[in-house]
Structure formats: C-alpha cells, structure tokens
Amino acid sequence: MSESGLDRDPRFRLATDRDLPAILPLARSTVPGFVDELWSRLAGNGETAEEFGRRAQHAFIEVGQTIVADAADKISAMLISYPMASSPNPHVPGMDDMLRPLMTLFQKAQGTWYLHGIATVPDFEGQGLASGLMHVAEDLGRSAGKSRISLLVIDTNLSAIRFYDRRGYATTATAPVVKKGWQTTAKDLLLMEKPLG
Ligand SMILES: CC(C)(COP(=O)(O)OP(=O)(O)OC[C@H]1O[C@@H](n2cnc3c(N)ncnc32)[C@H](O)[C@@H]1OP(=O)(O)O)[C@@H](O)C(=O)NCCC(=O)NCCS
Image (cartoon, rainbow, N blue to C red; front, side, top):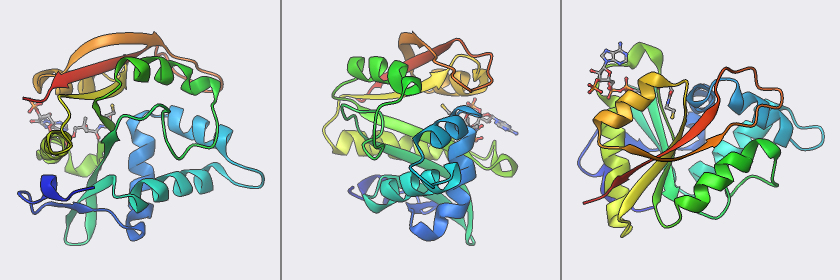
C-alpha cells in the first residue's frame, strides 16, 4: 500500500506486528460478538479463536492494509482498508455461513475501495481520530484510482451509521445477518457507499 494517504497526518502510521495486542480488541469491537464467533468458527485444528484472530490481523498488517493512530506509543485507533476482492477476507481459509451476507453485498461493491474495519479505543472517542482515518481511507481509494468507497455495518450500530451518514455515506443495499452462535438483535447488514470525487 502506498503511504500517500498517511503523508498529511502525523497521528497515523502503518501498523506492525508489535501493535497486534492493541489491534485485536479494536477488531473485536467493530462488530461485538460477531468477530469472536467467526474467529472461533474459522480457527484451524488446535488453534484458539484468539490465535486465529492474531493470524488474520497479522496478514492484513503484512500487506500494509492496517493503519493505526499512535500517540506516545499508545495505540488509540485503527483502520483496515483495501481494494474490494471477491472474498470477504483474502486471508480467511474458507467460506463460512456467517460470511454469506457479506459475500452478497461484496458482489454489489465490486471495484470499490473497501473499508474493512475502523475503531477507536473508548477513552479516545470524540477526538476526531476516526474522522481522520476516514480521510486517509478515502485518499488511499483515490490514489488507487477508485471512484467509490464502501463499508459494511450492522443495523444496530446506530452511532456508526450516523457517523458514516454525516460523512456522505449512503446505504445502497442490505442483507439479513446469519447469526449461528452470535447473540445479537441485529437483523440486517448494510452496505454503505460514497463516491470519491
Ligand atoms: C464509530 C467510531 C469509530 C468513531 O470513532 P471516533 O474516533 O470517536 O470518531 P470521531 O471522534 O472522529 O467522531 C465521532 C463523532 O461523535 C462525536 N463525539 C463527541 N463525543 C464523543 C464521544 N465521547 N464518543 C464518541 N463520539 C463522540 C464527535 O464530535 C463526532 O461527531 P460528528 O460525526 O458530528 O463529527 C467509534 O465510536 C468506535 O470505535 N466505535 C466502536 C467500533 C465500531 O462500531 N466501528 C465501526 C464498525 S462498522
């Protein structure tokens, strides 16, 4: 990944494996309960959910797709983004029923820059970190020649939906969630998109 989107904001840098302990809880917070359930379903023989999550997050870091906010060696927020691929996570070993609604929506978002995950450590919320990371993602999408940016959010995450709405994102499609062991009141997954001018 080019660092062009990072050049103008000194709060942000590419993540390294040293950041994994801080990144794992942030990844979990993006869709509470869903991420843990999925990690435990995708974990290989003898692997824990935590170990699978670590392996998946390492893979994003390795190819330069994870950006963190770092103030005095304290990770306060993270962003994962990349060009939309034909599978929900290029590092996931196989298809799982819980991923089917994601795949349905991904088909509709082919060719976009995809915002896979964004989260701020609760103590640092409301300081503009996620807003800054959204600008970085949009810059990366433009630099990659994309005309749209996309993301998925569950219908119960009203604060995130408002956050995206205020930044010009609109819902373009929905798909019913597949719960399996995931305890949630969510019904739908929303695809939100924004043109990159
Ligand atoms: C949604 C989320 C990423 C926003 O992160 P953030 O760093 O707080 O975002 P910002 O500070 O840039 O902006 C937050 C907005 O809420 C306002 N705000 C004020 N105080 C706030 C507070 N204590 N907490 C959260 N937001 C607050 C900000 O002013 C801003 O308003 P605006 O949208 O009108 O500009 C963060 O709340 C989060 O990590 N949520 C859990 C993970 C998640 O749901 N991720 C998205 C999955 S799709």
